[in-house]
Structure formats: structure tokens, C-alpha cells
Image (cartoon, rainbow, N blue to C red; front, side, top):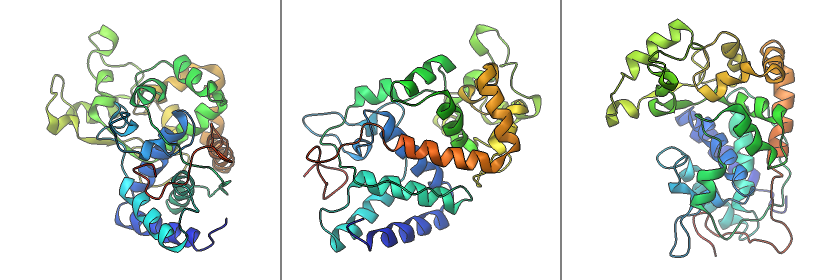
Length: 297
């Protein structure tokens, strides 16, 4: 890395952010994924809207959902003061994600550097390319494979849901009238179902309830571990897109494996994150090193 002090700025600021709110680790991880899965890892998720494009921040999957922009902006400002126009916003986001995951008990992976920031963003692309919690597994897998990822990466990166939360709207459709049956999703364990129905009442679309948060992993929601996979084995996955992994024999086999072998999950998660970080990167003369992450130079 050309600017040696920058890793210390990143490490300290991420540590401070996670100390203030453990949930920020999941938020940074999600932001990094949402950046890379939309036209590659180019920091486009960080760009504000302009007169020439509608950015990804206000896309359906990101609006009032993706968090942590202020953490990246603070790091960027410190790095710029020390080493102007040297470290890209996308590299900062990738480094911050690795630091955050390790701080909450997950694996640390060495982040390959040298990405450059994109000069545009697309709200339309974000709406189309980010996997939805309502999609069937084949659609989600297709979105991954279009980026050079595969079913194993789907299963491994879904393990990120061992930390973080989801709002009622992301899973409420499973609770009462699942796919027009008039009954809840039969794959939800009764103990989890009762709690979720109480939290997200049927027919209540009020802001108060729709903004309520449920942990993606109800057992160890603030610790990165392999409990996510045990939850799927016990039919206590929160999102339909998580629990549906058990309906695919290959995916279910991997879920079973990772539920037993935590450090194999850690190794594979780190490998998949490095693989994700290579998707559609800009290098050489492509893109730029932004001075501020929210706008092009």
C-alpha cells in the first residue's frame, strides 16, 4: 500500500465505530457487497445523486437501509489529509469491511488493493442486480454467476447473515399468508414464528412496525460465527432467501457442513470475500481516486 499510515486510520475508525455500535460491522459488510454486486467493486454505492445520474443510495435495496456512509467518509477524510489522492474509496470500503468482520469474531482476510473508483452510479442497476430476500434461489444464484461467483459463494456469503438485522417488510410475507395459502411459511419453526408475528402484526404497514428490526441470527446476532447455518438446519432462518438454501441438495449439504465446521466456514468466507472484491474492478487509467467518496473529482 503506497500510503502506509492509512491502514491505521482505517483500523482505528472501524474499531471506534464497532465499539459504539456493534451492528455497524454488518452494515459495512452489506455496503461492500451491495457495491461489488452492482457493476463491480467501484465505490459506486457511495456516490450521491447528481444532475447526470440517479445513484445507488436511493435504490430500493439501499434506501433507508444501507448504513455506515459516515464511517467511510471519516476514514477517507483522514487518509486524504495524510496521503492525498492515493487510496481509493472502494479500497477503503473493502479494508474497513475486513476489519469490521474480524472485530466481531469473524475471519480477517488480506484485501488485495489497487482498485480505482468509478465515475458514475446507476439506481436502475442496483434495483436489478442486488439479490432480493423475496427471490427464488435460482434467481439469486444467477445474479451471482453473472459476476463470476457460484453456488458455493451464495451459500458462503449468505453466512454474512450471522450478524445484522432485517426490517419487518423483508420477512413479513412469510408470517401470515405465504404465497396466497392463508397460512404462514411452513418452513418457519413455530417458536420463531410466534415472536415474529407479535413483532410484525398482520396487515400493519405502519412505519412503527415496518421499521422494527429482527436479528438475522436470533441466537448470536452480535457475533460473527457459524450459528447462521445451525439456524437453517433448525428452520429458524429469518429470510426466505436464507431458509430456501435447505431446499437445494447441494446448498443444504454445504449448510450442514458449515454448521459443524466453523473454521472451514471462516476460511471459505474469507476466500469468497476476496473473490467478491475482484468483481469488475477498475485499474490502470480506468476510473479515478476520488477526493471525497460521495462525489467524483
